[in-house]
Length: 418
Image (tube, rainbow, N blue to C red; front, side, top):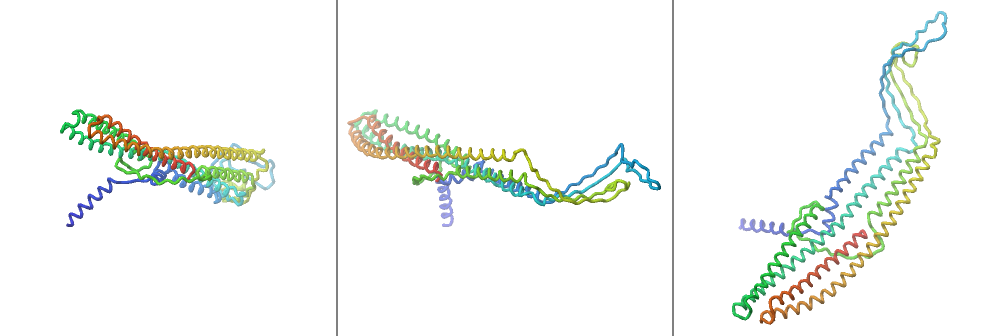
C-alpha cells in the first residue's frame, strides 16, 4: 500500500510539473527582478554609500606627512660683524620632516550639500532604472498575448481535427456500404494533413515566443507551460501614474540640490591646522642642529568674487529645469495620445466580438446542415470542409478579438501606469 501511495504521489508531481502555469503579473515581477538591468540597483546603492562615506571624510582631520633633504648653493648671512659675537650661518644641507593636521571648522554647509546632491543623483538613477524596466512591460504584453492567441488557435485546430476524424469515420462507413463516392474520404484525409501542418507551424511559433519570454523574465518556461488568461479591468482615469513623472520630479530635485552646492562653494571656510616637525635647522634658522618644532593656527578662505561664475551656473541649471518641464509636457501629451489609441482599439474589438458571436451562431447551423447532407451524400466532402473551415475561421476570429481586447485593455492600463 505504501508503495502504491508513493507511485501516485510521484506521478501527481510529474503531472503538476507538466501543467505549470504562469500569470502576467508574475511575468512583470520576474522581469523587474531578473532582467540584467535590475542588477544595477544594488550596484548604485552600494556606490552611493561609498561616495557618501568619502564625502563625510572631509569633515574629519586630514593628516599629511612630508620629509625633505635639500642642499642650497647659498645661505643667509648677517652683512655686519658684531664684536665679541659669532653667529654661524645655516648649513647648506638642510633636513626636515613634518606631520600636518588640517581640520575644517566651518565650510558653510558645503559637505552636507554635496552629500544631499549625491543622494539626489542616485535617486534619479534608480528611478531611471525603474522607468527602463517598466518599459519592458509592453514587450511582455506583446509576447504574453501572442502566446495566448497561439494556444487558442491550437485548441481550435485540435477541435477541428477531432471533428474531421469523426466525419472521416462516417464517410468511410458510407463508402463501405456504397452510399458515398469512393473518393470522399480522400478530401477529408488531405484536410487532416493540412491541419497537422498548421499545428506544427503553431508549435514552432509558440516555441519561439516562449524562448523570448523566458529570456526576458529570467525563468525557464516551455511550451508545456500554461499562461493564465488575465482578468483585466479597464481603469478610465485622467490621472497618470507612470514612473517617468516621478523621474522628472527627481531630476528637478537633483538640480535644486546642485544649486545649493554651488551657493555653498563661495561661502567663507574656516580651517584649523597644526604642523609638528623635526629638522635641521628648526624654526630658528641660526641654530645648526636638529630641533623639534610645531606651528598651530587657523586660516579663513573666502572667495568674495568669482566673476559671476556661480550666477551663470545657477542660470544654466534653471534652463535645465525648463527643459525637464518641456520633456514632461511632451511625455504627457504622447501618453494621452496613446491612451486614446488604446481606447479606440478597445471599442473596436468590443464591436467585433459582438458580430463574431452572431456569425458563429449562423455558421454552426450551416455546418450542422452540411454534416447531415454529407452523411446522405447530398454534398461532397469538399463542400463540407469549406463550411467547416468557415466556422473555425469565425471561431478563430472571435478568440483573436477576445485576446486582442484583453491586450488593448492591458496596454491601456500599462500606458496609464496602473
